[in-house]
Picture: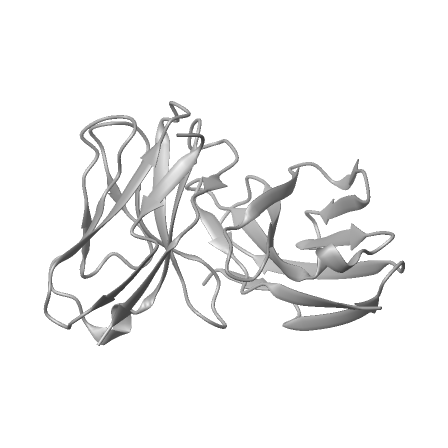
Length: 109
Length: 112
């Protein structure tokens, strides 16, 4: 079967750095996405990786290792507004997105 | 309209009733999707459409139907609602099936 694993919840301090991990086992691989979802709102696109390595976009970076079936989302200089759920999704061989259950990130002052 | 809109925002429905959730996008995206999101689970694909006039089944299609008569609209119908269909429903669209998906604001549906 297809599976995406992420930690259920993480806590970090304002101004710090946090890394959210995602491991996957899917039928084929055509890219990995990270989305942010604030409570009661829609998911919004953060990043996309299809090749191995690090993609940096401001305070957010995303890393991919296809051989290990592993990705992480790195958030720097954490702000209170970063409190949200972070969803990892993999596009499989049929170009369908398989979603993890999400990681709820709690930021403390 | 800017982006994707969904209606209604929320609904309480009696079991056995028929219900249509509406989704409209103005980005001229070819592909559209319906997901449900339940606590502790990832988003699950119900149905999708890669282009107007075509539809396909996702991971959890039973009890739901869709149509795609034009590019902009992709309604989701529950023919006879059951309590297990209580969920938050998100519509999404992308330029093609290989592009990034963008989500509507969601519909919170409660079936009693």
